[in-house]
Image (cartoon, rainbow, N blue to C red; front, side, top):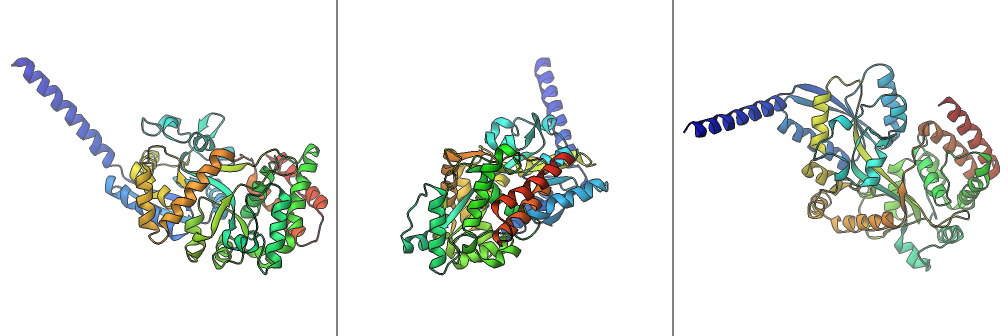
Length: 425
């Protein structure tokens, strides 16, 4: 009898302590600010669902979003950090500059059985680490590639896959001769999308854009020469374009080739859905100085600011975002899941709910990107000072495309600008 009573008391005590711990966790009170890049309706939908889920689990945690474009987020982050006006959390793709600014909280001490490296795609987790320290938890894996308009290619008898850059150039010229733009870029803004396009082509030539030493001159000029060769096939208006204008033109069917990635669907459907049936991802062929194609594989995750005064609450938000339910919603609507614990049936169900008219095409495109990544994927390069370099590359590329400078002169400008930035870091 006494033994039974002791066991009962121990069990009751454990349950009581657990209840106290749960109550304590649920009673957290904090007003959090989150920098949330991505302004499409789909991306905002995920943000608001996260807000609702956090309120459901932790009624004392209030979330305020600062919605920004990806092109503006790092500048906004820098202004807030340098002024001491720290947000609490930030959606992030590239941790390099924020870590150099000492802005991010190391997260290794926060990891749990359900949130740790073993639960995520290795390449995505690596994107959130620097010198072995984890500064973000990856929710999505991003596969970057080029796409082609399969209807236009079929009309002109253009055969795929491409074997060489000359094949790409010939296809671009044929499309232009048929009244379409062979290739299009988004060269407006602060250079983010120009740099991304340039880097994707450069990687296929065994080059990273910050490699501007003399030993890389020939490779670099080969990349610049490629863009020069197709300059006349591009829309003049692209000098002011960001993604909305680029994707609008793709939906209309005026463009034969452009860069994108697993974030394609939410960026397209703001303008229509017809292009879902004529979009085919492809690996850009190896350039003159490379042996095989390469595709960038990056990640989107959540980081915590070192200056946050609400770190316990901030981590609860990260845990909520990385739950199977929320990550399934997020990855089912944009990109692919970096967490290996999300059921594929959940992802397809979410895609069907978010994209009822084109969910099958969305899932098919995601599968194609995953296959390309498995064959050609490499981790997205981490480049210290990349936002500053983006503007340098953008200005030189625009002048090159406008016929104002030669590929050799463009390299000289990029070399001088990037070398200066590297010396400052």
